[in-house]
Image (cartoon, rainbow, N blue to C red; front, side, top):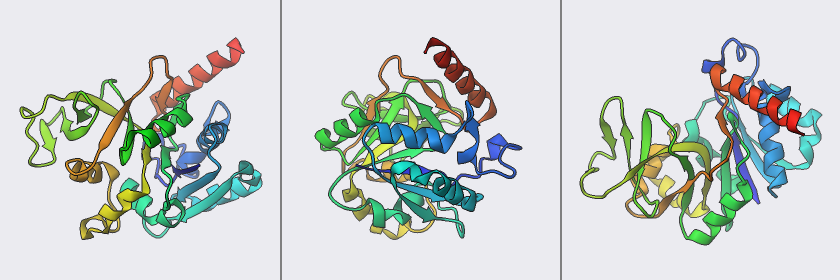
Length: 251
């Protein structure tokens, strides 16, 4: 099974930890973020992994080599010349992700004990072209999904802005869901990226919002009891550290 890890971010929220280190190599419980994600993917059966790099990218290349790539087939999608954001990063990595099987995408700064294999299989059975991990945690920006978990729009609660521009919140009853930084895509989605709007640097969420009216982009509610942390900011990095320490004591 194939997966991609976003490890190219600048890590500005974690400064000064990222002043001389890529965010993906910041340790959580003494282990780099990237290693946590790689081992979770490996345990779930993913063996073909693409990692994108930008900020201090050579450190990531050296780290992977020093650890024998953790026994995985790892490809480097090099964005050191230009950071392409999430959508552009996926598009650039197409040579390794294309084909007939879906691929999972995981932010390096997300730490979770979610059953990644179950998410992947759910997507493969569903007929959707993308499946996004979502939860009802508090945030400022929400994906809007109907009772069948089909994506229809996006809302910024602070500004009241809706996307796409033609979205009518009164037309289809929707619930607000927060995106969890893990998703599964079918390579058939690459056909939409041929449009000139999706060249170079772009985010994947506006892309999903643009195509959700013509294909199934669905949500996958986070199962109850799942641990999930956005470890890309100091306060949640500390919470993740405490959670791992508590788990270690139980074991």
